[in-house]
Structure formats: structure tokens, C-alpha cells
Image 1: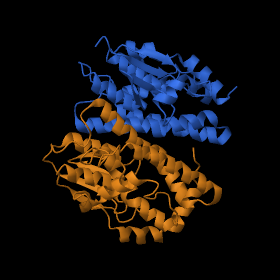
Image 2 (image 1 turned 135 degrees about the vertical axis):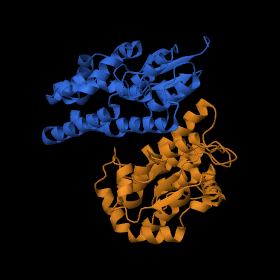
Image 3 (image 1 turned 60 degrees about the vertical axis):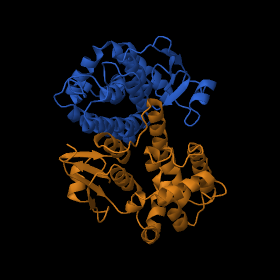
Image 4 (image 1 turned 90 degrees about the horizontal axis):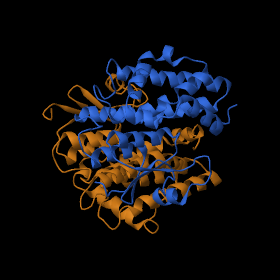
Length: 229
Length: 219
């Protein structure tokens, strides 16, 4: 099965698609990257293989489709040889999964709201995301990566806070993370983005900046319909 | 492993906690059920200490170390006590699919269920329609199989079967018949209820509906 063709449906600006790509590259799995051109007009291929959520990334391994970025990373870890992305010990695995889910379930919404809202509401969301990122930062515990000496599952899951964070801060004109307040997280972010394998599939920062700047009004409009839980 | 200390902090009517307790019973792991009363607003010291991030239950405490997140606990239980029973399928693709549909229950079924019980009028009707659509989606995933896991009760069965304890509530609150809406799902529910793990953990539909009416302020 591992000799069968692997395709990844992604989009250039997506940290979720990046998670899947970096997992494939870390495991040394050859793959064909199929980039969506416009997420406002999704391809037949994407809609066929992810009818429930209609989102990137989708991994196609032969005739099987795997959706959801963290599930793709776990699948790649299990289905292919190469350095393990998740630790061996069940407790450490549960811990890595817990923090990865924490990022998606607890951080992504306040992060988004802290970027695009204003006034007192914005201050509240900023405080919330900063508290959450402090909890994440504490998981580094002096290690080079969350995974230890080399990248692991949680590093891959947290990629958005390594590369995309500062781009969004710049577009929004908001500062959420500084090296003074988050020395370990910022150090980790540099380690992550300069990793030789990560670099191969990280979107160019200037391109991201231009792309997101052009979408700023749209981003601001999205928060109007978002009710925080 | 008789000297092991295994505790599960949970409340009897918590659908997410039932997953942890069913998994432990399926794997024949002895544990202490430490009850956390969700009707009390403040969480206990134990919960705040063991799950400082979310302050939620269930929490599995194994030799003093906490594991949080219901499906996280199920995976942990499956991995830490290997034994003969395996909850996650052996095949990697099937594992990914089982996890995907467990997430679907969390991200689609549960919020629709909440909106159904908290909504009124049109909002309630829309939530019920959505909830039933999600259940039919799961029914199609089940297909003709005995369990979501195939011939064997597995990960996705554990993830979803606690929600069957709410089906009576769906019927009462929505004026629907689950037998009419999702007959294959109902056959699966009855098959699951033959298992000691499910029978001993799932409360009755009446008890579930009564306490949820209390939580949601429904007359």
C-alpha cells in the first residue's frame, strides 16, 4: 500500500495544508501536490473527496481519502516508515494529541477575533489568546522542539504560530506575541521555520503578506458572524 | 496490573464521559468512578488540578497522571492496555476514518443536539432537521455492518453509542420517532446494548431526558 501514489490537495496559504505536507516530507514520502486555485470555487476533486467539510487538506492514498489535517498527520505517521512523529509512550501520545487539539479547539477562534475586532472586545480576545499561548509555550520545557530534539506532532500542529502568526499580526496591525513576553515560543518559531525540511514547503512570507493584505476587509467581515462560545 | 490506580472523573449523564467508561470496561480495566456533579457550578479541586486548561470531564487518572479529552482517553486506554480487545482498527486508513467520524460526532452532532435543546420555534426545528441529517449520515457510514467497527464493536461505536441515550429525549422534545427516522441506527443501538459495557454505563433515556431538561431549562 505504501508504494501506491500519494496526492495532497492543498492551498498555498493554508497552515493546515502545510501540516500535511511537512508530515509527508519528514517521512520521506513522495507525493503530488494539487493546489486549489480559489477556495471560493472549489474543485470537483476536493468536493468529491471531502464532501462533509469541503476543506483542504485532503490526502489521497491510492483510492482512499483522508481528511482533517491532524488526522492526515497521524495517518502519515502510521502508514509510512520514517522517523516517528508521535512519541511511543501512550501517555506522551495523549499529551501531544491534547495540545494539538487545544490549538484548533481553543486557540484558533480567539486568535482570529483578536486580529480583526476592535476596542474592549479585541483586548479581551488578545488576553485570551495570549494566556493560551503561554500554556502552549510552557510545553516546550526548555526543549528545542515540542517533540524534543527533532520535530514532532505538536510542532507540526503549532506551525501556524511559527510562520503565519507574524504575517497576520502585520496585516491586522496588532501585536499579540513579542520575544520579551514569549521568549521560548519565539525561539521555537525560528527553529521551526528554519528547519531544513519545513523550509521546503513553507509558503513565502512576502507572498502570504500580500495575499492576506488584499483579503483584510473580508477577514474583518468574517468576525461579525462569529459568536465566541 | 492489580496495583494500578485508575480513576475516571465523570458525571453519570455525561455522553463524553460514558465513552471513557465504556472503553475501560471493554478493555476489562478496573477503575474507580469519581463523580463530579455537573449541576454544581464550581468545579472541584481535583478537576481544576487534573485538567487546569479546560476544567472539564471526563478525566482519566492513571497512577496519578491525568489524560483529558474523551476520545483522547479512549485512544490512551486502547494503547496502554493492549490485551486482546482492540478498539481502534488495525488498518491505518480505517483508523483515520474512525477518528474522522468521531470528530464528526463532536463537531456536528453534539452542537446540533445542544441547539435543538436550547432553541425555540424555528431555531429548534432547524436544529432538529440538522441533527437528524447528521444521524442519517452516520447511518450511511454504518451501512450493513453490525458495528461501525465492522464485525467488532470499536472506536467509533464507543464514540457514538452514548448519544443513543439521548434518542428518547430527541423523540420527546421533537415529536419524532427514531425508529422511523433511523431504523438501522436503532438496530445498531440494540446490538450495542447487548454488551455489558454499554448496558452498565448508559443511563435510561428517561433519566437522560429528565436531567437534560434540568440543564437546559425545559419544562
